[in-house]
Image 1 (cartoon, one colour):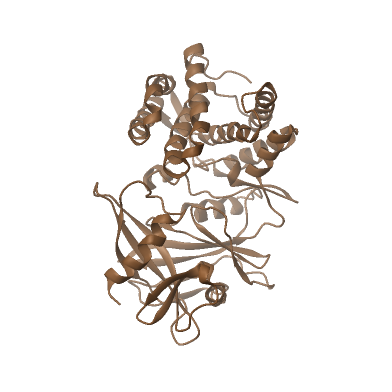
Image 2 (image 1 turned 120 degrees about the vertical axis):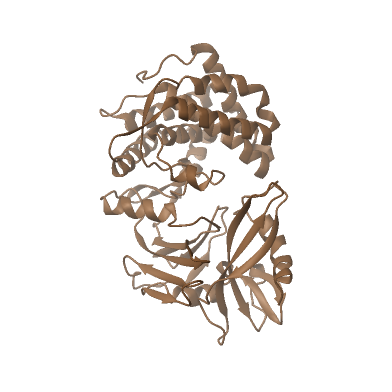
Amino acid sequence: MTGSQAEALWWPHVREARWFQGKGRDGALVSLQPLSWLVPPGGDVAVRPELGRVAYPDGDSELYQLLVSYRAVRPDDDAALIGQLDGQWVSDAPRDSGAMAAVTALLGVEATIGEPESGIAVRVVTPLPASDLTPRWYPGQQSNTNVFLGTAALVKIFRKLEPGENRDVAVTLHLREAGVEDVPDVYGWVEGTFAGVRYDLAAITEQLHDPQDGWGLACDACRTGTDFTAHAAALGHALAAVHRGLASDETTVAGDAIADQMSMRLDAAATAADALAPYVPSLRIAFDALRGRSVPVQSVHGDFHLGQTLLTPDGWRIIDFEGEPLKSFAERQAPDSVWRDVAGMTRSISYATSAHPDPSSEDALNWLTLTREAFLGAYCGDQRQFDGDLTRAYEADKAAYEVVYETRNRPDWVTIPLRAIQHVTASVTLHGGNHSHAHL
């Protein structure tokens, strides 16, 4: 097998995968570097991670993980099959139940596999439950790939890799250790080393029982005119608990620096999505309202919306702390204002009105207003004052990001964030951005 053969085999699969974040950038898969065998050859199936480097014309590149299974006999499930190389049938291992069963057998015990320069380590915080752990690939659209293990656990396979510890693993583990129960428990993780650099490859977490997706619940509620305020308030309380668990020493950032970063992202977004161009001047006004201020910052969720929440019999749970996929690793690691997460949820609540038969109707707008106010009221409680300027600026920043995302991934949905852009710019025109720290 030559590298070029493997790259040619995998590239059609990678470029169409939902987890591939380089769509629209004319990239190419230029290398595949295998790590140690998780499941060595000799049995029915062999499995190993292979790290694929995707290069772009602008000189940028990204590293993706392909978890690959190899079989001498064609697998039963053609959906997992990628093709053939050197007489071996090659599959996407997360969709190959036999391959994942072999991998699962390795996840309950701390272990180091392979050579230091290309090895793999399994880290265990809590042993996996002694129950049925039959793997089942989750077909939902994700930026990573999830495999359920029976009804007890979940393996999240990270696709786009960044050096060092994965933020989702680190933050969730920190919150659990701080006593925050509004996030899933962590059983452990898998890390790998490539060219002397450590990467987190997968997380093994609690599988939440009977979870209901927050996005779907909110959309159903808006579509049917069902009150969602109690759920919105519970989400506000949950986010407040997460922020308390992540709070650190008093750290501040100059509002000018935040405004500059938002303006830079806006410039990049307007270049990537022509539909933003008419709104750029008004959006800058929303950002400029932060200038001259000192803004407290801390670790936050970074990509908070209804799709990152699950309703369980034990209450709401917040998941996926990796941050916005299109942001750089440094941006996602940096402390930020808690109002970024608040704005992420208010934007998501606004998104949910798209499920209404007439999103611009009085009924839909009333549902939005009541739901938004319930969330904000519960989040602020008696401990925090609502910050109108920060929320508006972060809503505008988030909506601009959404326009780019929808342009690249779901063009038919681009009108949804554009509607929010129009609302923010109208608000800026009306208020001039001069009611910072306004009360609810």
